[in-house]
Image 1 (tube, protein in one colour):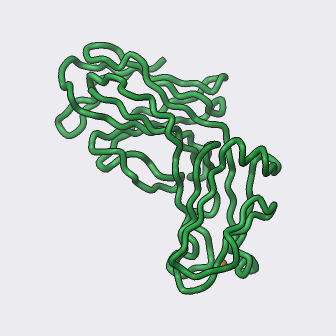
Image 2: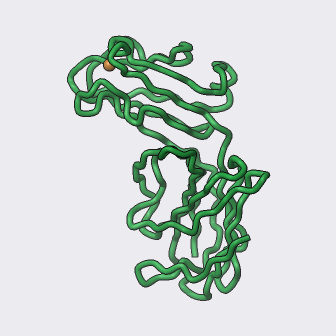
Image 3: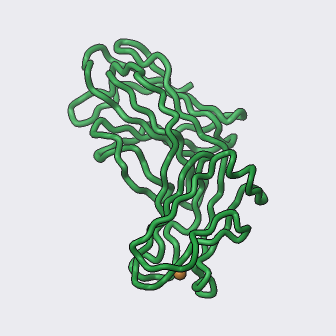
Length: 229
Ligand SMILES: [Cu+2]
């Protein structure tokens, strides 16, 4: 177990955190459909937790649609912006729409020949939790469900719970946010980080959100956490 101490931000201390709720809230992700008129989905390839929701948001002046190659989902006939389409990739959806490795490839029907394709890789949840987050004590942050040996990062903010879009999804962190020392998952896909929590500074709220790095700039987010001093 690693120990870190006295995490300072903006003159405050990341301190005295009492767990008020271990949110198991799912993550929401946005995929732009033809951003700036380009015939592409952005991000093109997504890694998400089972239970997460993808919302496609139409842009530009041409007609597009979202069509799973397996027919697991279909937004309908191609239409122009403004338009949105959402799919929740929960256990029931995955069970009812099986594809190899839970990897859902999809396309825009009229523009597939121009490379307007994407994929959604549904993965088992990465779970962030905390224990003993009490002022004057040694609190612990836990990361579960990772690939053994993976690099795990955790960000925190006291400014709010976002949303803030990054390449791997939408962070429930408002800027400015900060990163704790990276961790490495053990053989069981678990890692933990102990944090010295100074006494005092009651009343503030902190927000945490983690990710497992998958290489090549990709990553998969944990659930977000809200903890109150
Ligand atoms: Cu299109």
